[in-house]
Image (cartoon, rainbow, N blue to C red):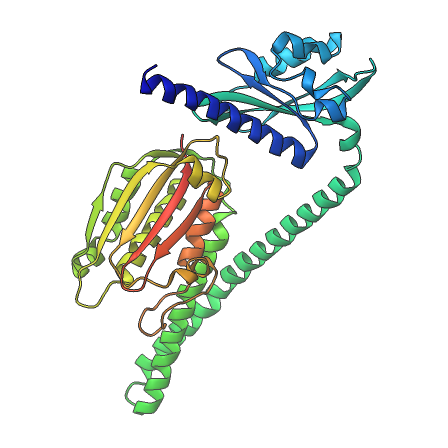
Length: 394
């Protein structure tokens, strides 16, 4: 036997072991019967473990039973329900399909089970995972579910009220700030010959502080508008969005001699306005936090997010996500602050040295999450920063 054949056989055996360990851990942890349907071989390749405890069968009589053997434990009237469940599962669906079936105990009686089916890709094999939970077990939780739903709804309502308050307060503050700036400027102009230097300095400080406050309020409004948007998503070419961003930042890019390196970017489903703001904030950040006497270099690359990356960021591992990395050669920051920088009003550097509202990255995070994605950062002092955005593909 050739080395290739031996290795192939070992790989098959290892896949079998991995699948059995996967099933064993799942059923032991969650006390469910798990059916694994091989979509290529058209059979229930593995289905055992909890059958002997939940239906009181001898586990030794049911290893690796094929579809027709296993179907004997289904009520005759529910066989077609199970088959329809398998046939109705769309591989690209993000929501599991479900059905209720009766399974036969070893003594001939029946129990109702809720079956949920979902496609997974394990070791290159396309499988349909179908956990079956006792209906009576599910009936134990309606009260807890109702409490949880009420709590979630209360939190959502509180969050909406906070966002509404931020929006209204920010909007209503614009007019008095405008008047402060206008009247201070008029007073300075009208009384410039009678005011002493100290009075002029105070008026200048009023105008500067009012302008800073206006910038802060504008940022707060931008933050609150993210989740208030009711515009439908559409297919957005990020290459086109980036051209717009570069055009708007053209003067800053020229003044700082910034170099922007870009690979081909994907098309995503989303809001053009928000995705433009996301890229604008990240590029502006890369320019702002540049090293002294070093021209900023910002690279923007796109690839397909891996299953491991999706799981690490608590995203749907069965969905397709694109990965966009925005990397700069700036001053960087300590990795321990990688989560903190996405919080509102958080600063790692002095305001006098690096002016700003402290909301820019919080807006980036909110935009990414609003698009069912996420954003995270990696950096080290003096080695620049890398911001990775994961967004669902069209």
